[in-house]
Image (cartoon, rainbow, N blue to C red; front, side):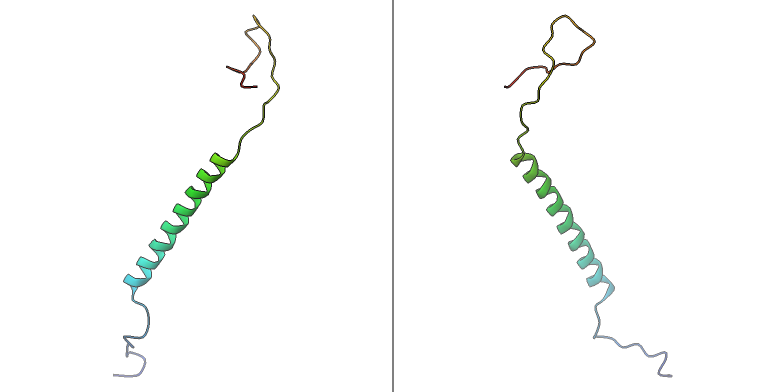
Length: 68
């Protein structure tokens, strides 16, 4: 066997280990992104927005119920 055709085993990571590592990293990113979205959704409180308070005008958009 020539030195080119010899395969060195036992030193590098196997394809299975690399695949498991990549899937783990992907899941960690996914969980982290979702946790960040939940955090931002719970911490952000929108202020009262001024809106048109007219009655009888069906063409204007108004708030369903004012919380201010």
